Length: 89
Image (cartoon, rainbow, N blue to C red; front, side, top):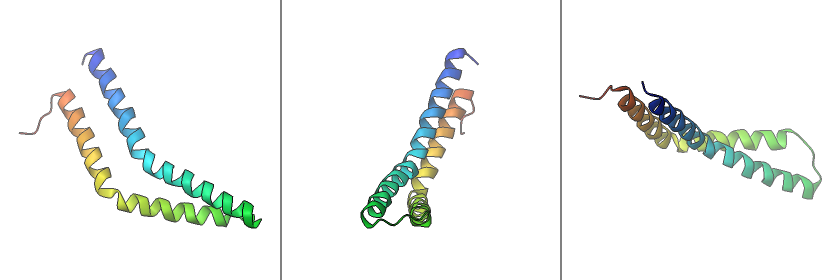
């Protein structure tokens, strides 16, 4: 393997990792900010009020986006196999 191929594989790996982790992280930030605003307005300070909605929304996002996750990982592996010279016949 050439150095350029290894660099391209690493770039593709980092890009795919960021792409796959973005939806849950964005949803966690939105839900976290929303619950913090609600807690500040109502002056309720309870950890379960932030934890339970975050887990529920993250689970829903993961289930809804499962087909997209599968296609993204499939495309990633196709790119990696093409770099390695393993092609589908």
